[in-house]
Image 1 (cartoon, helix red, strand yellow):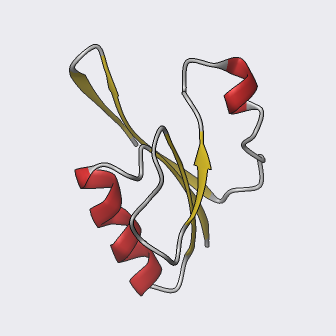
Image 2: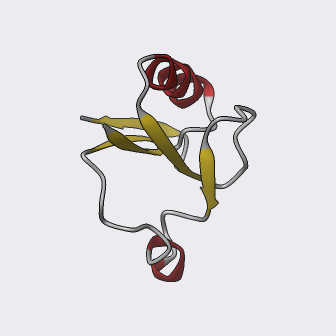
Length: 77
C-alpha cells in the first residue's frame, strides 16, 4: 500500500512510519524537516503553503495526518 504521512518526522509520525515500512508499505513523508528514517522519501514543505502542497502527488492509498498547529495536536484518520 502507498501511504502519505503528513507530519511523519515527529514522534508519533516516525513511529507509524517504522511500523508501515516493517509491513512492506511504501511511505512518503511530508513535513517541515527531513525524516531520520532512511527508507522513507520526504517532501519538505509547510502545510500552510499552497505551493508546498502542490508538491504532493495524489496517488496514495491512504493519508495519515499528524500535524502541530499553534501548539495544538490534531490527529485526523
